[in-house]
Structures are given as C-alpha cells and as structure tokens.
Image (cartoon, rainbow, N blue to C red):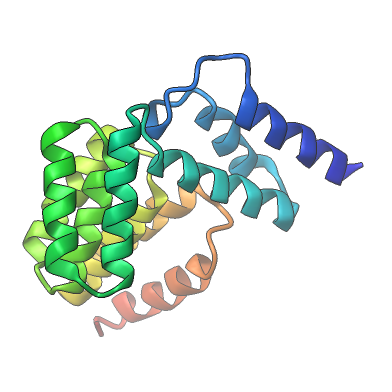
Length: 184
C-alpha cells in the first residue's frame, strides 16, 4: 500500500494540475517538502528528495536548463573556472534562479573561496529558504572557519527542512560534543 501511495504522490508531483514553473518557484515543491517532513519510508523520502533536486535544477526557460547542465558537466569534469563562468552567466540571465546561485556557491567552496561561497549561499537561501543543500553547505563553510556554533545552526536548519537528510543527525551530534569541548 505504501508503494502505491508513493507512486501516486510522485505522479502528482510530476504532473500536478498546477502549471509547471520549475526551479524553486514550482508549486509542486510544497508537496515534496511535506513528504520529507512526514514520511518514515526511506524510499518515499529519497524519491521526494530526488524530485526536489530535479525541480531545482530545471528552469521554465529551457535555455537556462541547458546552461545549468553545461555547468554541472563542467563541475563533473573538474573544470571549475568554466563552471563559475557558466553559473555567473546563468545568474546574470536569471537572477532569481536559486539553483544557479547554489551551484556557483558549491564551485567556490571547492576552490576554497569561502567568502564568495557564503555570499552565494545567502542568495540561494533568500530565494529558497528550504534549500537543505545550501544550509548543509553553509554548515561546511562554518566548520572550515572554525565557527562551530554557526555550523551547528546551519546543519540544524537543514534537518528542520529535511529531517532524514543522510548523515546529518550523526554530524550534528558529533559537532555538539566538539562545540561543548571547544574543539573545532
């Protein structure tokens, strides 16, 4: 019965009666985030999480979606300067596209440009406050900076949005112990 329910939810999420806008403005995201909050079924949670990422990556303008995929490919090929260039062009064309900001934040993080990464994470979260990936990334940035309290706050924010985010509860537990001991 649970699998049937999952199938119905996925079909609804993918082809709901509301117009499809893609990106963080897609009205179907609310149902997917609700699944993250309420489901105890790992398969259902993972399916909802994957659909959220798919939706964030998509854009109503297919040219922007193509650029997003070019940037993703550049990242996968470790061509980070190219990826920054693609995501910057995408942000210039679609400044309200949260995932473009998030992807560029990720590249900046990889390059060790933490201030730039933080600025892009903040913009991502301004556009999509439920972006558990950006919250998790912010936690990683704050850990590198040695700011355990801020890291903990970011990770707890990610878990508030996505209670079953893989590995996050153990990370929070360990970080709380380290922050209490002032070791970071």
